Length: 88
Image (tube, rainbow, N blue to C red; front, side, top):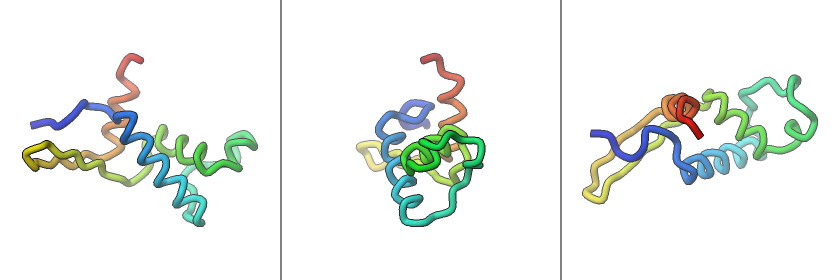
């Protein structure tokens, strides 16, 4: 049984970017190559986190729940890949 849409919702995306931006601002290592990014991206933890999410390289799992208490763990990478295939 699948819970929720087969892509990353805007609420999940905001939560992941916010958590990752906090980690970066506290000194966590950056997982993308910043040398190829413009200066404004290199200075913003939020933009760095957004680039990491778009690249699908964060080792995170999204856990979705139903009202009955059922849960489903979905790797972030899968949701990002399906989101890229989706027509916006």
